Amino acid sequence: MAITLGLSPFGLVVGMTSDQVGLSLLETLLMSGLVFAGTSQLVALQLWSDPAPVLGATLACLVINLRLLPMGAALAPVLDRTRGLRLWGTLALLVDNAFALAIAELRAGRRDVGFLFGAGFGMWLNWMAMCAVGHLFGNALRLPAAHPVFFASTAAVLAILVQLWRGRADLQPWILAGAVALAVQGAGLGAPWPVLAGAFAGAGFGAWRDGRRQA
Image (cartoon, rainbow, N blue to C red; front, side, top):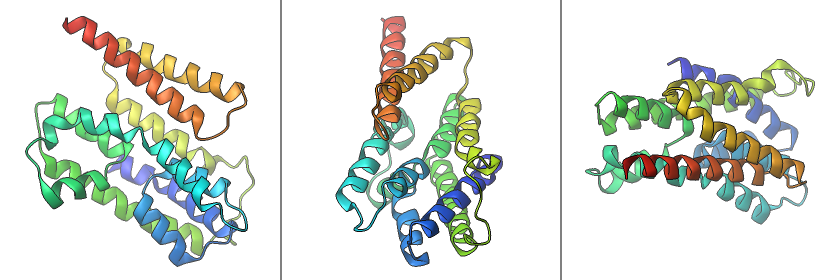
């Protein structure tokens, strides 16, 4: 519940940003409901112009959301007996926060796909509501760029890390991911490349390290 509610400021930011770039409420809700990924939505909105760069925004969302592939693989013990609409419906609602909660459950010995779906669906409902509120009150809630509410996305990531933390051994892939992301950003490559490079560097190193330990 705390992680779900913690996403509320992030949803407000996406809703306000959608209003500022000229999206209607319906367009905002369609984007939020179908994409359901705050970071990629913000990147797409930052690229928005007139005429809309549909191909560029779509590619940006695709690249950032590639991080969901290793998440799905990690959740294989939870999803291996799920088929059809239940499987694809659960995967459609998979976000970082629901993944973190499901991994915590998996480590505790529980493999309930219903928990994963329920967590994702609850977050989706909250996300849709907050994006709508942010859009509806966008004019009244216009905030300066440095306002604390824009820390919401970073705070959400930190909350996820708390759920995933297993000890000091996790620091190595996390530090590597952050360093690679900063290096890519420093090289002049804008979104979404720093996020993608950092995610795959950290995940790749973690998988290699765990594989050596099991060998």
